[in-house]
Length: 299
Image (spheres, rainbow, N blue to C red):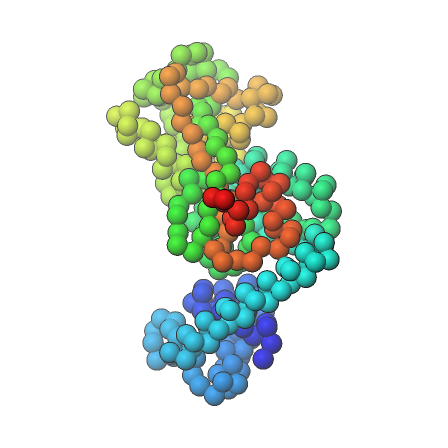
């Protein structure tokens, strides 16, 4: 029985999916099934209750899973300790992030990190917010970056920074001329929004409700870049994170307006799986982001 067997089985239990476990481990779905049956032969007992429609472990399977997690944790801890003993900062860091953070907030930090630790490889994947949480829970990545973080029992949330939400318009739009803009002034104007399930869209909807505005977006998109392009061709106005429009404001393709007397913020956070062993490279990455290590918080 090898470490890889325990890893594949643990992924299978946590994802409850042969296909997802296969994807996480770079093998075929058939290979995952064969691994599960090989473990059953090895332990001479059924681990998966195949009489159920949904994935379910037997009592013995649950015990093997618990033991597998302990073995994997100790193995990861050993590798991390050996790297620290050798003062090695290397390996790969996998990050799952929403578009706006990955494209506009993260790059300077990654640039500095790679400059300071050139032996580390950083892989960034752009995902919708709900999939970032899924990636963390399934151990598909080391860190996740989201806006408006939601607390979950198995996820550690480290506050990262706060961004401001601002109005963007085409340079010739009537609202671009207003220096004392209020939220109520958006009434009657075409509005471009994010998809309804995106956290920033939900925050904007709350702003409208609090100001008793009934605004139905004329367009909805799943990423910040498409929203900006639609505003640039004057299809409407939008409320977006200020950090995402710095370049367009500098080039004059978009006008940025703050709301008079009000400040709407967007909290950002970095996520990782609770109980996860942080390698020296992961610890240095958290430090580069200017955050405290989880074990040192509250001291």
